[in-house]
Image 1 (cartoon, rainbow, N blue to C red):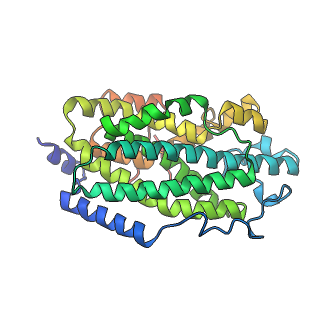
Image 2: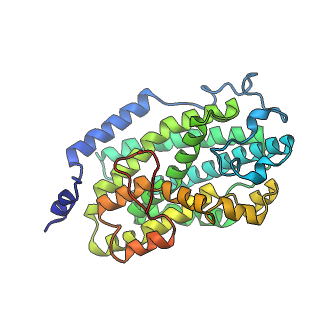
Image 3: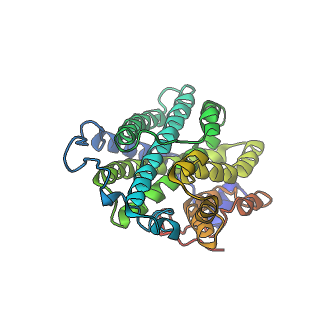
Length: 331
């Protein structure tokens, strides 16, 4: 049975080449029609976005893993504000460092792009948007808490090496893009659905969510188009790398570094409960990856011995029935 027949038997039909090219054209046109500049579209010095140290809007709500924990709720209000400001600035700093990895990897990938490849145009639009995101996040950090720790040291050391995968193993690199963007998207959408935070945080989330929808969609469709073209060895390697990349980069995004936890004063036992050592947090971890489980199933790489790694990394569960389905993963 051919690969295409396998896909059809599972209820999935790979997007045709022309449909993929049409999607790229649509994404490129959308990037031209709707885009943002952080120093044009955000009035940083307005009274509405003023950052004040006693503003209770910085207090984390239950949509945030820290804000939902009894330890945080028991703290004095001023301390809750301080941790909330640190938390939002930390998320922004790690986010921009991840965007820098994305920019480097995509540029490494495009060096090898052939002429008349429409992926070049859209991917370059995406990088342009990501550079604006790094400026936006950094300006936010500078105003809210310039002393945040950011990503762990090991991540910053590994960024140049991970970015090189854009050239020699782009399918693994685009997997990494989803590993970072899906958790950020989950965190920000959850915050906005629950009423948001300070207006400065709300504004950068609105912009980021709007543009990241295109970026996440492109990464999904790039993998759907190119993974079936891989040779047997490389596809098998990707099957084993896929859940590992997802979990490792998810932790960089979602779990504050040791220095950040120290700065916020989060006890170790509380950190273990919040990040993946309690029943509720284990479910959250699984729920983050419903869409990528669907993608992996469609690509035929979440099966056999490789599926064991999904369980070992704690991100196995039911695949979404469609992209962006409300999170309800379960075994």
